[in-house]
Length: 484
Image (cartoon, rainbow, N blue to C red; front, side):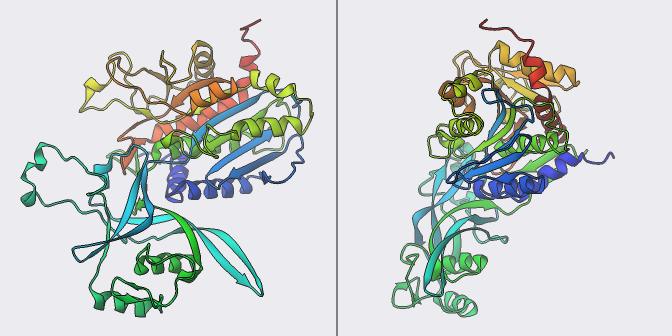
């Protein structure tokens, strides 16, 4: 059996390091720094140089990386691949404390449009970020810290068929009543034992049968003390040093290469960390030698946004000024004329990369007969006459021409006329900036499930296509005459 392509094995590592958008950005930062990219905080002035590589983050859940060509002149174009870091999941409520029937549970809210029935009977944990209070001498500071509890600490159990004989006629999830994970029983002796093993938790506020000692920061009337202790232990701090947090549930089963012929990737969050990784690796590898940017006249960029799954309307989503801010600041670093940004946008090109729907062998009728993307078939160009995707004849031609020059497979997709069509960051950025855009994505199955699947070959095809885009866009674009 042939060895697995290294792109796929790297993708597996990236997926396993990225249970949340915060972790995905953190892993991206590590890879960029190792490749010689320099971080430029948005709160500071930028002193950019030709031939250098940079990145910035916003909210630590969106990241933009860019490499400036040595022949770049202000007003020249940006060659961008955009993707997103978030995936549908369950996030903890501000008051997560639920106790019923002798069980301790956590209140969660749904994020995005998940296939919520797939979250039942899985070994779950939590990951995300904490805001931690740190005291040093007489000063106090507040630190953002990422956490991930590796072992399973909760589960959302299904109801036995004996108590729900009608379940075989259809399992309909009530997301408020049914989608509540169990973390422990409320037996006083068991919780007291756990409290003794982990040290004192708090006093004076009575919760779950435990006498609490301290509620200085995170209010243990809002969250179970045993849960606060778990996340504090993972963060190597005390519960009363946790001021706030953003945590979400995630599966403990690792991403893996599988299938009888080792041809599939089984993982959560393929939508859209697969495209995030492939675009990031393409940017890194297209700029990894000293001469990579010698003849480059533009700026190569990857932008990975948060909040795509809920509409992109946030300070760090694709609907925010993140992209325009980046293009403006880079252009103005070399010439402050306010006329050059608009010129640059008209010379720019965006590849909106978000996973696509592969044909499902058990639901063949869900695809239009002439548009059935297949695994191993390469990136899918997405079309929609109603502008749910931003692709047009010019942008699809450019992307298809790149594939043809490198012998890469390419596919097309339109949704059936009698079905609704999803959307991506493509139309948001195309309409907001006026930038030429093509919507593409690698084909996958089980999109928005807790456990998705795609093909090893398509990860490689995606990486090679994005890398070729960075290397050759200028040459192809120079021969296209429109609006002259």
